Length: 388
Ligand code: CTP
Image (cartoon, rainbow, N blue to C red; front, side, top):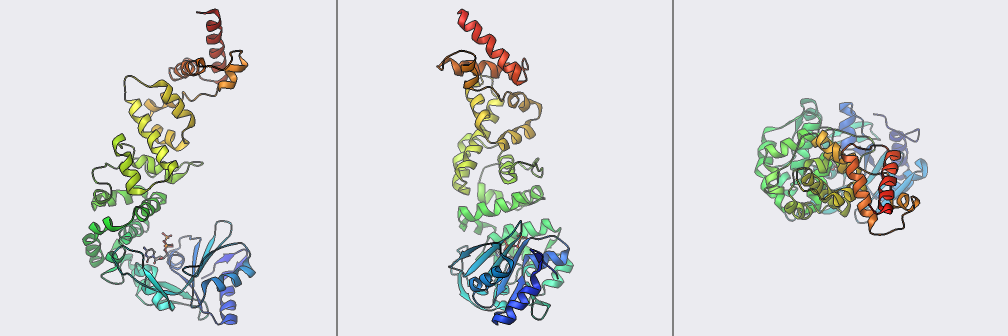
């Protein structure tokens, strides 16, 4: 294995620090799994048998970069251009209640691997011995392409692992091993015990994946959507599309809830505890979608919404509705109140009406460019002045 950070061989460096400090360190989890699969992974997890924060500061003295420290778990994250290194104090976990966060106790590499979700995530590279430690047959499962839990209570302890099993199986085109699959299906109801924050986190992890559509289709197949969003229909069309300059999670979130009814917006807010930006975008989306299909359009509110809403909202509508949406979206004006003022009309209540007129002319294809918007405004103002 070879990982370079700031042109330094990370494995060699970890070995040097471990030998010097007598704190053993291991590269673990996703990065080992992905290295063996030939997949790029820039999130490096290092487990140390000792104090993760102390070790992280020593690492930082060689690698520079930024550091964020998490006192409670004695872990720290170093970050570089696109690469992050989590330094974790090896720990054991106990689940006192299903779906609650575990209690921890500092321990050794074996216990740290034993607390993990699936065998393919339990591989640890021992930097001193320069070999992979494989306590749970992770290498064999990785070769066979199997997602397997370490013990039968795994999904009960932590139902987020249901989402994770689906995510890994789909991402790598792996199978969920038969017993694991049965345990998973038996625990689906337990998803109800998870907090809104944890469910949101899992949904957004899925929405970031390149096979997001297939993953959401599987959530629906297992009835997980019913458990989380009872009665709300999810849309999986156009979910895999990526647009540069758009925030992919927001775009996909909006596409996922494209057919949401206005009365259900609060339900989504409650079930996922989305932030204000996401909530506003969702409200704008539902409003615009309903307006598109409505005879008596609220031109003023459509114009104002289109003007200030997120690009992701407009893109979701455009992708889902095609030409029909384009008609409204192309109405986005370039002229502002300042332009009306420059044309000689003092600020006042007529501004809104003038803008609505320009907007309507634009969605009806009478005008298109900024120059045409200004010319159109000019004509409207002249008419007004003549008292027509
Ligand atoms: N883990 C777990 N149970 C969870 C979440 C995480 O056991 N509910 C363990 C997994 O073994 C995982 C490790 O914690 O390997 C780190 O978690 P994360 O960074 O989410 O996983 P990665 O394996 O890095 O996965 P991804 O490639 O999706 O980032």
